Image 1 (cartoon, rainbow over the protein chains, first blue to last red):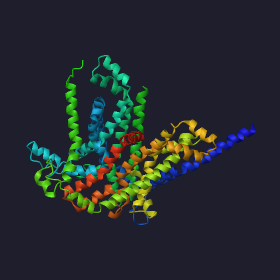
Image 2 (spheres, chains in turn green, blue):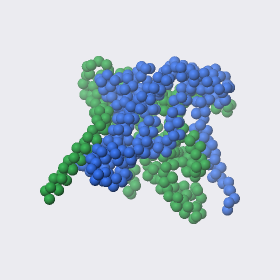
Image 3 (cartoon, rainbow over the protein chains, first blue to last red):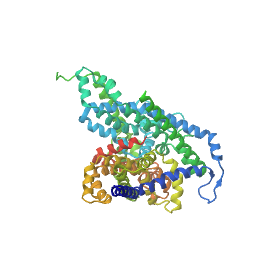
Image 4 (cartoon, chains in turn blue, purple):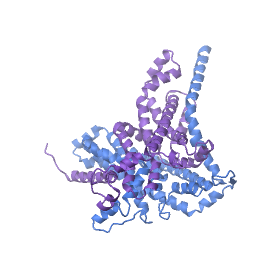
Length: 300
Length: 277
């Protein structure tokens, strides 16, 4: 009796030791590059610091007071929200339509699938540059199309404070629709074939199959796509930075670009950290609330 | 029954397919076609025209520039980080998927939570840290953040993969007298190869295209990676659009190759990565 217990205890202890050894590396990386920086980011937000000199002034919540009344930050947040909303209502339906098309077409459409997926394979920087030239008023695609339709060309969407944000969102959609397309495609192909066959035998058209069977059974997939799109849009950076740097005149400023500019261009490291930490809090809160709202509905 | 019916639905589907083909393919055509044009051909001949001939001087000029150096930087950073990610993730996934110990669930929850952290909150502190340890403006300064930020998702994917390996295999190894370490290296690791391959492709594509850390942690052209190199060209050849398009075409080739080779694995990784939200 005693012997078995101590054997079991021994085994437990050795398991714990082995687990510790195996887990040390991963927690080293997570602690050094993720957990510590989050804490440090908040600590930095309580300082005034130019990033170079060794003395930092502890100024308490001064930076946070500035942030609460900073109109540029609100404008940036508002732009993020526009991206969130348009991303969800533009990307997801188009992605769903294309996914359904590819799913119905089967293997015949594999070449189309390959082309449809291309935008996802380019880096945001490359996409940003590509479209900066595509939007170029002199040599770009938009102006060329306008000329073909009898216009005068010279359309400068990115330089226009009203249209710039929508021009950028169009590119974001272009880049990410392929992702949701593949995501929905995976969801559609996991619906049992029997369901489709049964519906067709009962005389349903493809359209009816889509609305009455496919769409309802993809609820879970659609929900996660919404959350993904939401979080992704809130932390958007690369593409906007490459295409407009937040301009013209702040028209496409986002939380992340504003943070970058403060921290690394005007070297207000303390205030930059404040924006970064605020962003972290905003994103985490919105994500948690959305998750809760979405999952709560499911139970009802 | 066999008569093919052409319904309105099919026509609409066909039109949609064509439009989307033009929307996704158009900018690509613009990129590749422009890369084959002379600088002034683009101005005079119009955007959508085919290049006059296969003018390859743009590509030559890119290869003769610093391009091989940027390419090498990218390859070095991605390879080192990838090895670290695969090793660390398989170490971590083993106890997470196979051991019962008190802290298993809470520790795994920390890893899952780390997946959702936006990198921008860490950008400044990591910048400061990199300067302190003397790795600022060196490609090796990128290895740490790249590894750390791709680890949580990798552990997540690999843990669910390892959990599916039959318990009997592990038990029979233990009966044969293998300790945990030998079981890991001789049984679990070889059986995880498909999972590791998914991670390799998915993480490589992510790191190959990474922008924010590369922007903040490097400064001189010598230590720029491929995505950042596009800036250098842009500064140098502002008006030479065809040349920049040649650079973009070169940058896209490895990714398109990766997609062609590991399409299923890449998509699988992206789907699992999608749980991030």
